[in-house]
Length: 238
Image (cartoon, rainbow, N blue to C red; front, side, top):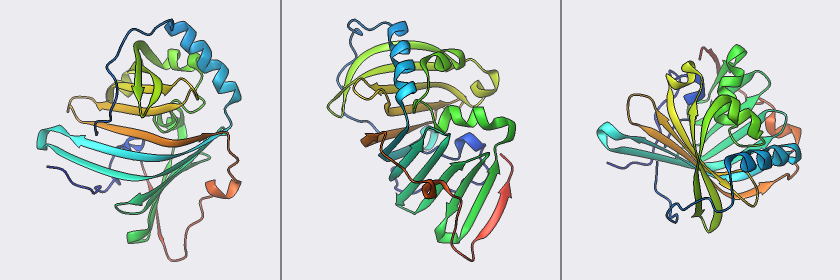
């Protein structure tokens, strides 16, 4: 069964607020990583992280629930800035805003005029492993947080990419996510796609990025938690 809608998110763990999705995208068969070694790639990611300031892209977010053969997809735009700020504007099928600013994560649903605020607190770094994974992330930090395997070089959306498998080192993270696959564009050194496998269920969700623009100016107002009058504000625990 395939549908184009998203369920409520108010009762899920914080870093799964974004969880949604997995669709197949055209890609060439994996091959040997040519001259790339894992250490060389991590060094390149370190260099790219030093130059990273911001990113904008179109996003497709898909969730697959294997047991009931259900797939749901939503689309929109993502805005990321180096100072740990992120905004996702979902435009279809139902508008929704996800904002990461300061020590809080906000989920605004205009259809029901409600804003949920999650205090990240000590879970900030844990949440950022998901919502900011690969966007200015240093290779050395990835190595600390994950057991990394370089799977090879592929073609995705007509771009040359490197595919990685990431196994979380933290028991807390592995309780939720068993592994992650990530495809990094060799031209921009930011993700083209990320695929998260949920522990125990076999379910997974995917973030797919197109029309990526790196280091374009994003004004401060994009990341301000300002909402229309009359919305209900709820502080939620993650």
